[in-house]
Length: 370
Ligand code: PLP
Image (cartoon, rainbow, N blue to C red; front, side, top):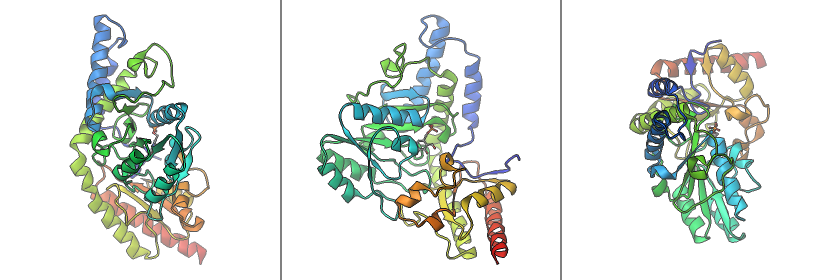
């Protein structure tokens, strides 16, 4: 059915009108950005404008940006590159699968509040040789914001480099590469209102990772392949809009908090995972006691509301979320957790409709079980 209410921004956000308009214009531009003629130069200009806008979102110089096919490729490029330099890779236990599977790595535990255990990180770094740490800026399922600057300080003491998957945080909170102090950072177009299939790896000056994809020397020989010109244009336009919209995005916390309060009134025993930690303003991971997440997602879908069970990548699978498992959540509550993620087009009526649907699904499930 056509979804009337979209509360799944963390899976993919709607294309922003600025991105759509810029991409439609870019689709009419013929030319390979590597060609020296006027057509090529016009395409090159579009790529470089996109690069400037994405660089501005992360507070870096355009030359630090390597465009990729998305967050997954940026994570793979970063981690495989660091591993190929002989570094032991430590990743937090709640990273996205694209980090967890990029290369052999050891998992740093997280606390029950969803925040990485910095003491454990310190101990693990002390016990290994040259290392690199991968810690996400904010978790895709719970929205919990990670203590990156503290992790960087610990890593520095041990001579380790730090990669940050900022795919979910970018456009939702300020992500300033230098303030965070990281060495590599991943971004994705479709999480900020750009198109899917485009992302970026940001590199600190002097940090070199070998290309994953060889080819014609594009992206300063860091990523082969003709640039995705319309994708980069859309990514750039979305980055600019996201940067301008950070304050408004922070305002979503009021709606999210009100939504959570209402659900707790309906079911006081419902758990909200990561609620006591600093979180992205738009994200809530909520247990509906006794109702499997898959049942909820289908029931919400029938009610015209799109939400996710755990991460979108693991939806469809019955297994409880590894993120919640890493936080020590028991299988029962974890398998009844649904992620709601709001965004710039969410309105009060949609929150109201969600609360009503939640209440009715919960009551129906209770009646069926009775
Ligand atoms: N990292 C995180 C935290 C994500 O949430 C996602 C997407 O769900 C990715 C990486 C992958 O990004 P992409 O879909 O652009 O490959």
